[in-house]
Image (tube, rainbow, N blue to C red; front, side, top):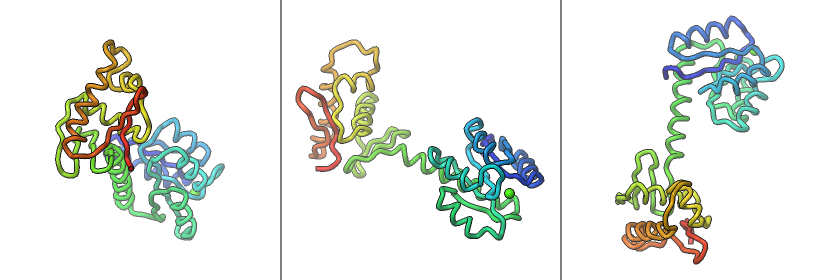
Length: 228
Ligand code: CA
C-alpha cells in the first residue's frame, strides 16, 4: 500500500488533520481538501488511488462529489458519515461509493477498509486483462491462451494477432488495420504476412479444436466471431 495517493475531502479540519497524519505514518501520500468543490478539483489534479469523502461538505455535497467522480472514474471512494446519516449512507452507495465508515471510527478500521477497497480494484483490473471468446481464455498479463483447460502455444506475433482479433470480436478488421496494430506502422513487407499468420492461428486453434473462430470476409479482412 506504500505510496498510494489518498485524497481526503473533509471540512472538519481537526479530523482531516488526524487522518492525514495517521495515513502519512502508514506510508500513504496524502492530500486534503476542506470543501466539496475544491475536493472535486483536486481529484483531477492529484489523481488519487482512493478518496475519503465526508458527506456533509460546504460548496458541493459529498454525494454530489461522489456522483461526479463516478461519471468517469473507478477510483475507490469511502464515505465518512456521522451516525445520524444512515439514510445518506445508502444513498451514497447508490451513487457509487465503495464503502462507508461511521464517525467516530477507529483508525485501524479505516485502514482495513481502505486496503479492502484498493484490493477489490486491483482484482477488478486484473479480471479486465482476461479476454474471452467462446471456449478461449486469454490472460494478457500472463500471455497464456487456453481452449477450455488446454493451453495453446503461440508465438509472440500469433498471440498479438489473436488478442487484436478478440479485442475487436464480431467486427471485421482489414489487413491494413491488422498490420498497423500488430506489426506496427513502419512495417514494410507483403500484406499477405497477415494471411500467413491467420493460417497459423487457424491451424493451432480452429483446426485443432474443430471450431470456427476466425472468419474471412473476402477482399476485406477477418473477424473473430463470438456467437453463431
Ligand atoms: Ca462535514
